Amino acid sequence: MSSVKPLLTEPEISRVVEMAWEDRTPFEVIETTFGLCESETIKLMRRHMKPSSFRLWRKRVTGRVTKHRKLRGFDVGRGYCPTQYKR
Image 1: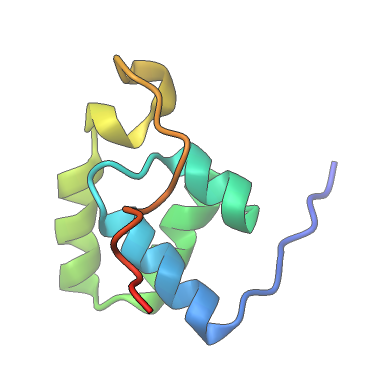
Image 2 (image 1 turned 135 degrees about the horizontal axis):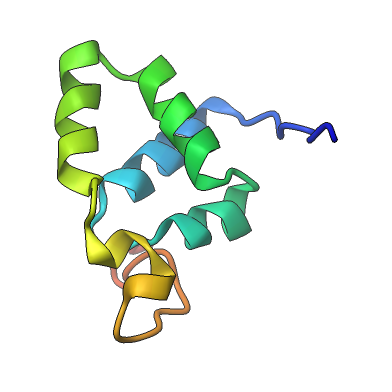
C-alpha cells in the first residue's frame, strides 16, 4: 500500500510546525488540515528543525494528552484560536 504525500508550501510547513508546537492542537487536526499523520508530522519536524529543537519538541509532546484527540476529555473542532489571526 503506497500513500501519496502532500506537497506543502513553505507557509504551510511553517503552519504545521506552529501547530505541532501548540499544546492544544491534536495531531488529528494537522492530519485533517494538511494530510499528514502523526508519524509524517514527526518526520517533517525532524527535517525542518535543528536537532536540539527537535529533541526538545519530542520530549514535550511525548505522552501529552492534549496532542491526541482520543486521550482528551473534550473535543476541539479548530486548530487555532479565533483571535490568533487578526486582520
